[in-house]
Each structure stands twice: as structure tokens, then as C-alpha cells.
Image (cartoon, rainbow over all chains, first blue to last red; front, side, top):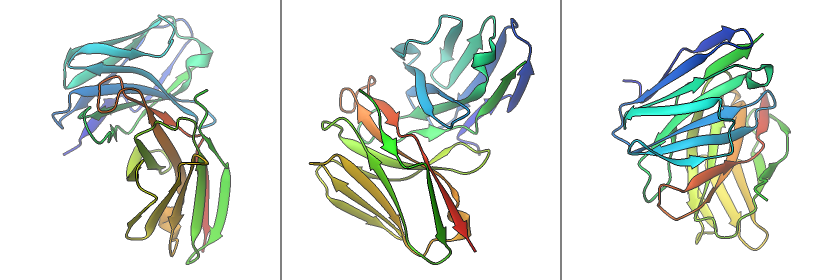
Length: 113
Length: 115
């Protein structure tokens, strides 16, 4: 069974569009994250949610809006897409306590043209 | 700052040992991690070390931690072609065990294993 899944795996869209990426984890974890990996493979946290509550927001433009309908899901909605949003977006989850082990999804490659 | 530095590239021959180095920034980091990313895939946790340890061995992997110099290294013994990937170190910042705890990843090292 897949622990952390993301859909879609690839997303190609035009500038100005609005798109969503979905993430689900079946590990029973309380904490979920979104990361952005740019073309140089640099990986940076964007958001984290703990029990559906936003905990970390790393100065991400407000065109990015995470939504957590329940603690197993964390979706990422992006408005007015820009060329610079092209990247691979990773979802991750962790138990959030003690040893800080995060489990990553396979990533969504977003290409904005 | 939150810069965690790694060398960009390492090339080794199959069967040799690989050593990947990392310099982190926060001396209060409680755990330090090594993640592996294969092409087109997400990150996979390889191993971790608690900050009160100097060394940890896990099969072919050996992690060395020098807290004074804020230096972390990952040694892979008997490197195989399947070890070819990008390796990221990561440090923790924030409240220990708390929800605000976050990982700061290094810049990544591409390990190429030549047959």
C-alpha cells in the first residue's frame, strides 16, 4: 500500500491558470507538509499542517493556499500560475513527535508554459 | 542563516567507499538526517543520528557527527551502482518533537557510481 500518494504526477498548464495538487497519507500521521524542489534540486519547506491546523507558512506567496479537509489529506491550490512556479512539489507526513522522520510522496512535476 | 551546504557531485567506482559531507548551521539541532532521492522519485530516509552521538553505523552506512565543527558525513561502504542518486542531509530547527519542528535540507550531492 502506498504510504504517501500525490495526484497528479505531472501537471502542464499555462500561465494564469489555477490548479490543485492532492496529497493523501495512510500512515495515521498528524503532520503533513508541502515542499518545493526547484530545477537545481534545492528542496524547501512551504507549509506544514498538524491535525488540520496550519503550523508553518514559509513566506510563500498567497497565490498558494493549502487546505486540509482531514488529517490524512493536504491539498495545495495555486492561483494565477507563474513561470517561476514550475518545480516538483513534494508532500510529506510525519508523526510530528519524537524522532522527526518524514515520509515523502513521489512528487508532482508542475510545468507552467 | 539556514544554509546547509554539501558538495555538488561525487563520482566513485563500484566497490569503493563513498563519503558525502555536509555542513549545517544550527548547533541546537536535535536530529540530523540523510535522505536519498533516486531519479524521478521522492525522498527516502536512509538514516539519522541524534545530536549526542558521534557515530552511527547501519549496515553499509556510517554517519559521523562533529558537533564542534557542525559537520556531518555519510560513508557508504562497498558502493553499488544502485546507490547512484542525490543525497540530502537535513537538520531540524524548532521545538524538539513539536509540530513547529521543521527540516532544513542541504543542497544535495549527486553520487555517480561507475561500474
